Image 1 (spheres, rainbow over the protein chains, first blue to last red):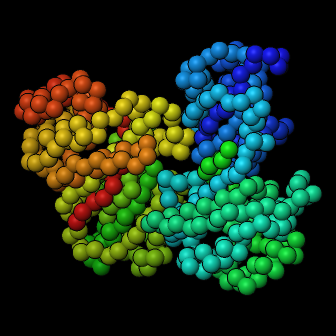
Image 2 (spheres, rainbow over the protein chains, first blue to last red):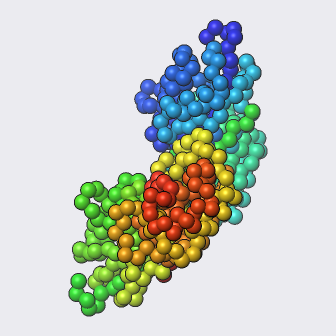
Length: 250
Length: 250
């Protein structure tokens, strides 16, 4: 990219992650990045690389995912949204496009994120949230889980809540700003906000809360599990299909 | 069916209609009835015929659909729900099962129904409601459409709102009890309650309201369209994917 006269675009999109091996390009399966990059390059009429705000795991969804891209194209932002949406498959949607400062980068400029974990809590499955929620059949003790979730709030070392094989082992300290739960009918929504998240961190936190719900882990053990810095001390990893990147903050 | 010692079961289910040619068994495609009948017969350990509360069109969904079935099986109702759910594909779910009076029939005992029509009203598509909502890009004039919808409330001849080829041409008088609209973010929910509905009636009413929204049909024309008794006078037929049988009343 010739660094002169380029525009730096900040783009918001949403995607249903079911059909993809996460966001970031990799060898062993189709990813959101390669599909979007191809469509964006076509509309901008030049080959581009897009920079995403986050990796996401296979099967994880995004209600708001930011990526940035540098281009020489003079296309209007509205025309970009329409043009790329016209090229994209049904499970990916461009929500907005705006011009950003030259040094804006979707990943490095990101100040925080909110994840949503959606649980369908009922004996019967829900035909309308296939691959879009975690189906959880057991009775859910909302107050207990809410109390437990507060142990994750604060600036802490989340090494116990990072998948083994985690690339970011150097610094596993993160700040979780809030962890709240809402129920509506047979749906439970867990909202987690923080400055950043380790690999699988939200899914391991939610899985651990389900273990608390089932009495396998007690609330009083949670601080100890955090201090242990050992993935094996935390609970299970909740399924990818319930997880959404819900908001990104700049 | 030996009419002695049988039980008459009243069963509620939900289904995502995308993969089916409607509820009722037909020759040209797979239907909900044949899939459910096969699973129910297997669990009851005898061949049965299920009686649905309604036909539904190809691609139409149901949040609450009632069917009745007569059986000699002594299976517990909870065991029935679990057993049939274990056999069914992901897009069909049994919600409940109870013993009903011997003369209960899901269709003939039905006193009323509520349909929901779901619209995704935004420039950008929604990856999470693929095949589950009608994507409508134009600005939506809620108050105008709400006013127009009230013209459908009452006991009226809905012949103009019945698809040509409609089997029920003998009596096209129906009572619509209420027609209300709710908005939440970029979603518009239209709820229509009535004692019964003609073939495609809800979809033609919604399509006509979209024509009113776009200024193709004026609110003052609606009563005249109803009086005309002519399908060609009403508006377009809204897509099947936005329609849900939402509640059935007994």
